[in-house]
Length: 376
Image (tube, rainbow, N blue to C red; front, side, top):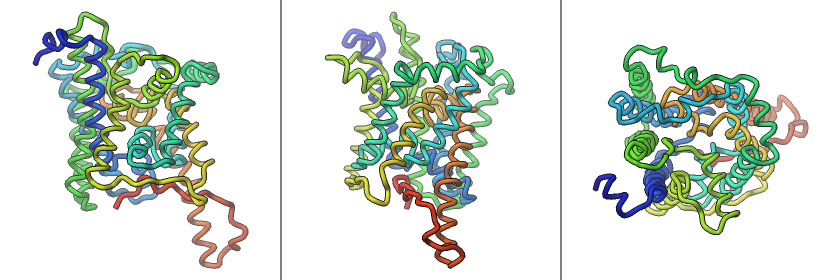
């Protein structure tokens, strides 16, 4: 069935929602199965224990980059229609927002995409945290926090032509970088005996990002209406979807409206089929304040950075947007600092107390680190 046939049966907005649903289902199923999570990869990396979690993230990121750069090279994806590559961006927003987002995802137990995926598996902690992310993101976009976001974003701006570093690279440079990262991911996967299924699922998770770019670009090229060329992202998408449900009797259809429910349904389906669905609630050990603070930081940081760990880090990184790479790097830094201050330092103090080196009563109270991204 070609696009002209689809237009005979569906409106442009309906086709966008269907594309979002397909991409969301694919991402949700395989992100749940692969345990894809930037927070887990960051913690593993900064603790000098790079293993399965780091390999999973690297495979997904590189797969998204390879496929996206291939489609750009063949002309299937028109970069002239991609907003991130043609509009003014904020370097200060990428740095500050990335740092805040990285800190928040460590506290909340996962990035925005991971919270959505885990909430579909019965994790009430991540569902509550995800709602907080969405509300704060909406406040940062159009509400009371928007003046602060706009002020921070204005400190260091870069024009659209400066946002892509593709021109700095040799021909097929982006594709070459993606292949190099993929080979590195395979090396880590083999070294740490990563399950083949988890590895395949991680690759498909990354390919779903490229699929979003490809399908929306094809739709834009064949539609008489204006169609946004975009792919997987969660902070803005979740905020718009939730606010639409709250404020309007009927939800206007779009790619994002299909994406968010698609990810949830895909993760739910995968969890039910593999018998991994399990109700999880807040406990005295996990606490609530940690999740709330982390989610709030992610909501504001994600909107300031121009996207979440997937929206900026993977989706934006795959098209070589420099602000996305800066935001991703800042997320790694923010996550590393927060893990050291909140969790790693607490673990060291507890170990010292058990060894009798310090009094146990003198230890500060640190909430238990969330186990929502634990692998194996």
